[in-house]
Length: 128
Image (cartoon, one colour):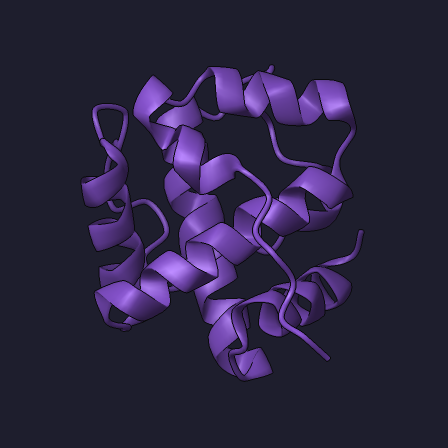
């Protein structure tokens, strides 16, 4: 899935403007890549990985982050409040679930702490 389509899906799921969804998606993916250590398994698909450069890239390791700290870092990187960071993060994980293979998604989630389970579960789509 190309990044513009990824962002469009995140935008729909989270009910956010496309520009804000793109900023949050980059923040979530960058924080996740740091948490995963950047190595395989858990590497992002090439279609998404190339869009990580930008504000907040390389802010330091996030390997010890729990869900609250993960959301705080996403919010800081994206310049949004906690509620928006949570909605955007859930939408990014739900979209990732569709953008990668089942095995790739399991590998990524397996490298996150167990208390991330609630953030990686499917979220209901907003009523159209």
